[in-house]
Amino acid sequence: MRKLLTLLMFAMVVAMLTGCVVVEDGTVGVSKSFGTINEEPLAPGVYPSVPVVREIEVWNVKTQRRSLDLTIPSAEGLIVGLQTTVLFRPEEVVRLRKEVGPGFVQVVLDATLTDTFREVIGKQKVEEIITNQESLTSATYEKLRESLGSRGVVVEDLMVTGLELPVKFKDAIERKLEQEQKALQKSFELAQAQKDAEIEVARARGAAEAQEIVRSTLSAEYLQYLWISTLNQNPNVIYVATESNMPMFRVADFEPISKSPGLPKSVSTPPVTKPAQ
Image 1 (cartoon, rainbow, N blue to C red):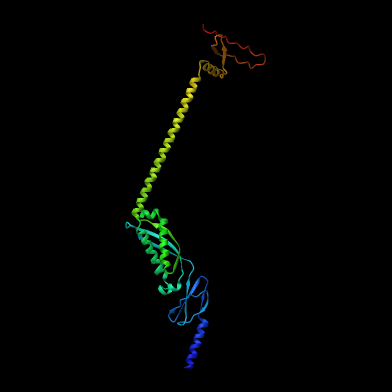
Image 2 (cartoon, rainbow, N blue to C red):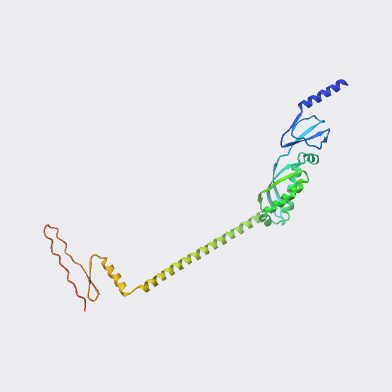
């Protein structure tokens, strides 16, 4: 009997020396002795672990991320696809270990997240879901935090990263957007046509005003002045004023100067024609 007890004690010492569990920062230990879970979690440190006598599970209590793809029916029965991400961390690890176990994420978190979205989205129509996506996420977050908080899980944030609309509703939205685009194009064309018409009216008004100014300032003397100025621009025309101030002109007919050395040929002066009486 003594030999058996000695061997047992020796085995326990060896187990205590070799079976140690390290609880790191950001984790806690849940200990179990003879099938009973201890109420107090273990802080970071090194703990001996002996089968049956003392078993230790290490639980991660840092912020964790969970993403799910959900299909939820709306109030009118249309299926809405949803991609959501939740940030959480387990807080009451001993309670979770007792009531749920290590698989609490799938058993509690996923189920509660799906049920909460079903409750919120099931009361709204698809159009309301699209226009009030932010309020939908906020309402779901509040309900989810309350539900999971009562189970010992802290919800830090909830995000809706994708929203897949029903095919029929998506087609209706595309048709509506196409019609709105066409209406905007027509409005632009109408505004452009009105602007072009205003430009043409302004040009016509400017031309009419210019003609009116010219018409009001023209006189016989000014027209005669313009005519004489035009004649003077021609080098082959000689203008001779008359006593009656009527212009008289004649094209000059000069003989070319001789190219041979000596005196140049005489230049004949064209006769001046008297004005008609």
